[in-house]
Length: 138
Image (cartoon, rainbow, N blue to C red):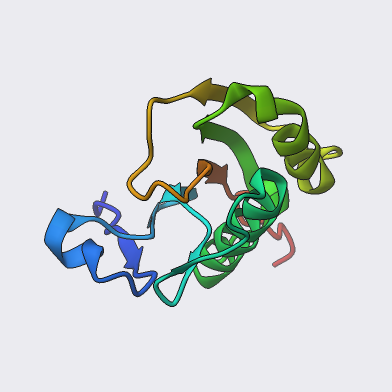
């Protein structure tokens, strides 16, 4: 059996080359999305608004999944890192706007800090794409 080659995409961050990571990696039917913050074109979005940052992050994750052939409905796991656990409900509600029906396994953990002091939330996601249907017709 031929090994499956990983498919990698960039998010355009200058840190990807320095740190040595990809925005997302697909191996077979599995997509891993790296820790994602609410940063677009080098600018932190929704400064001071944890729910707003969560929405921006989920949009970035969705775009990465779609570039690799996935959808938000394929997400089976999210990990949410927050700098202030007292914001859990606002962050959780924003997460629920996308995942209320999908219901991936999820964790929310408070961390001491994220890479930029304006980042309030960082999210990782894992998706498993459905296997292609097998057409049994001749």
